[in-house]
Structures are given as C-alpha cells and as structure tokens.
Length: 255
Image (cartoon, rainbow, N blue to C red):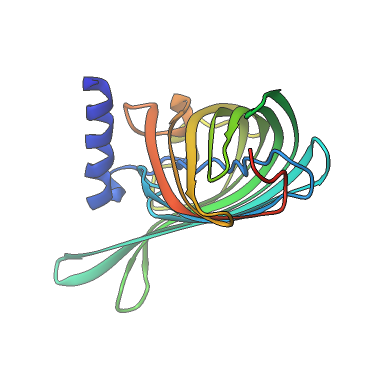
C-alpha cells in the first residue's frame, strides 16, 4: 500500500512540473472493447486523468465483431499539456504533445455463461514532442521529438452482464524508438536507446462499464512497467486512471 501511495504522489508532483523529466515512454490507456458477440459494435471516448507525462490524454476507440469469435478494434489517443514560466523577464512555454494510433485483431470464446476469454494482437504507431520555447518569438530553448512503433499481445477475461461489463487483462508490447530531433536537450545516448532494438512494456489493467442498454459510464485503472532505458526517472512503474463513456450496440443481448 505504501508503494502505491508513493507512486501516485510522484505522479501528482509531475502534473505540476512535467518538465522534471523527459521520458521516451509515456503511459497510455489500454483499449479493450470488451466484445463478446457477433455483430456487436462499441465506441468509446475517455480521458486519462491520472498518469505521469501522458496526462491528460484524450482517447477514442472502436470495436466490431463481423463474425462469431472474431473482433477488430482501432483507437487514437492524443496528449497535450502546457506550462508557462518566466525567466530573466522573458516568458517561456513548455509543451508536451503526442498522438498514438492503434489497431488490433482479436479472438474471443466463452469460458462460462457470463465469462469470455479474449486476446488481441496489437499494432501501434506514435509521435511525441517536448518543446520549450520563448513566447515572444517562439525561439526554441529545448526540443525533443521522436516517433515510436510497437506490436504486442493483449489477453483478458471479460465478464458480461445485462447492463455492465468488466475486463481484467494485460497488454504486453515491444516498443521501437526513432529520435527525430534533440535540440539543446539531453542527447539520444542519454536515454540509452539503440536503433532497431525492441523494448518490452507490460501494462496490467482493470476496466468496467456500467449503465443503460447502449450508453454506459466507463473506468479503467492499471499501471505500466517500463525498462529503465525508456525513462529518466528512478521509478519504472507508473499508475494510470481513465474515465469516459462507452456506446454499445448489437451483440448477444441479455446475459
């Protein structure tokens, strides 16, 4: 419990001063459409309200099952944060922006009457930028810009009820980074990343949706376990919390 409290305290500290570190990996929500029936369609909109460096992140996700036991999903996540400060009578702005696009192909099968096993194969591509510049003339003080791609697997167990669904699973991915620009900031060697090398990131999560037949409130909690090469912090475990709304149509009806 003490460990978890410490992690969330560190997260809160970096909300107010996100420039305290410029890690390559930024925590994100895990998209799980919780599909369990043919012709089921789901659309979600959520906000990552707690996570270091990725906060806030606005997420949109889609899921669809065209045939029995097969599902497809897609998601886009956009991160944006800004901080104003003054040094030597000059105003500066620090911005942290990023976008991730994700696609996945999944399989689901019943375990029990209201319980399903699901597994997705995921592909992701993303772009992040840290920019510190003078407001008056946009003169760059620091700039770190990079792309990344990842692929992985996402097994989960989904519990289905008439007006609620729950999912507990884990997304295990391999990330590859490409630093595009590093101006007046730490060099790429500082991050110890190697061109072409794959870095594992593991993200356990728990998700729940509750509400009416088609519109439901959504929440997800979890954490990311990150290799030391991808973060400039002493911590390698980052907690996450998201809330939002899910729209669900079709599928298997009453459970």
